[in-house]
Length: 502
Image 1 (tube, one colour):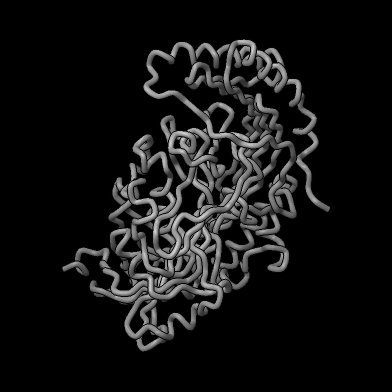
Image 2 (cartoon, rainbow, N blue to C red):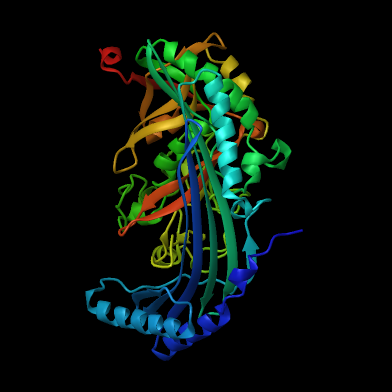
């Protein structure tokens, strides 16, 4: 049976709020007006060495009215979900637009979008907010005790969940209601011995799933927790004793648990068109991938096929419609190694003559205006591509990396450096033990240009994060990035210790 939006949200006076706000905005001369009603609930639990360390459960709700009056934006929000509050918000939004008009340097136009009416719910089996907190704590404690009994010194175990509910209506007639659920479990093992201190984190990514991701079977959508927790004590012990890498050039085999973050930083942010045009620079800078290179910029090797996608099942950026009423979709960003597309909202689409937005507007709360945000930007596998083992078997002298850790990238999304959770030496096609103190460094186009093999569909996984920041005032969005295992040749490897660099 398909899920529906929770009855207590659907039972709010959504249509009455829309009628009140939109009628008032229209009477005051708005060319465009939209209303969002939102309720966002977030919860987390933290366990330290098997003992409850903290947690929380909070809900934010409200309504927002956005208008275009005489080519100028206006915006206002309210906490009260009443028709009177909706009318006041419309009044305030229109007034803001009129006050702002003398300061505006460009006329706001929005790309056309068909009218949509419907309901959408993300793909999950068990609502995490239906699970008692005591049960959540018990599971994290059990996992922690398992690691501690296997010789790990300390364990940090935590998980978070978000339920996001939205109603959208505009003057054109669109009316949509949506509900998304996402979860993020993380365990970190800390080993302290006379040889030093080492840490290692689980590879499980955050996902657009429910409680089944933690407590279900693998067939029900759970991560393979039993396997990973069983291996973690031995892996962190091996990492502590591993030799430090010798800096130099290596062939690099990158697992999806690491490569997703490289995609996020060097492709995802770089192909947000507002950044590429210079309209946005907060948090992540602008972009080297400017529109004059559309259709000609060699982003990477011929094997490189990157899509923007807000429809993939369990994606953190997946939804039915964006916060401008645009039906979400999938499109090419890089094809055969060449830049062919960007991520757009309705204003940027109209400004650049794109014709239609590809559904990338999002606001993280009712108190924030929608801004252009990242889709699930993903590297596609090769249909008959190799397995991870087959890719490794073809490498004479290289390194295999799993798991994300730290990163650094310049404000043009061009020069970068990444580390990871687990690194293995590859010699003559075989893994020959762990390495540590490893970082890889490159420019974006050199790195993706060196991609020599791309794994098949069996190696493809969704990674992602809850905390992508953008805008001023800042907003936070969750986003996934899918990718297969891939081989990059002649990559510069750094040793992160001063001794190793010498």
